[in-house]
Amino acid sequence: MNTSLSIILPVHNAAQIISPQVNWLLEQAAELTSQFEIVIVDDGSTDQTEEVVCDLIARYPQVRARRQGIQHGTAAAISIGMSDAKGEIVILQDLSNPLNSNDLRSLWAMHQERLTKSKQEVAVDLTFPVMPEPLDPALIERLTQWGAGLQQGKESSEKKSAPQSPAKRPNFLSNLTNFALGE
Image (cartoon, rainbow, N blue to C red; front, side, top):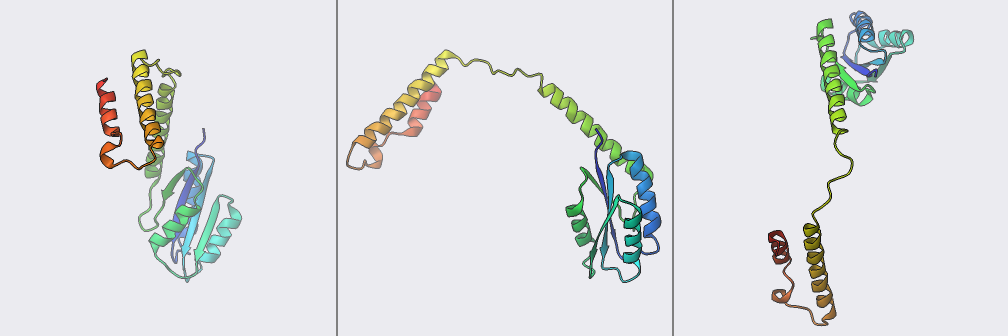
């Protein structure tokens, strides 16, 4: 199974550094999986970032971008990137504190371990019996009697034309207690 990956890259005025960073991310992601994307979110850049990003999109089909006309901050850019990400796994690449290749591989390996572990758990779950154990006949009889008693109480209260006072109503908790005690 080839898991998909989205790498979110929030940027602001990064025209000089974004192209080498995206090229590096493309190389790293390709080593991890064949299904990946890089989502660039331009947070209102005033330099040539928009033009550089457009060039990257034209060259690489794995690169997508969103642009905010004015700067809203890194948190807003990350939020936009998260909502646009299509990958099963999402990694944030911050240009001010970027992940290195070892970090990316470690994160990916942790995901693969969890995926393998969850598959093993599913396999274990499939070994449980499909049919539940039959219920004890005595329990079924007690449930049937309890239900009949509740139904009789309901029918008798419906037959009376005058409303019952609260003290004369069947006590559901009493019936439940009797059932639980086996009485």
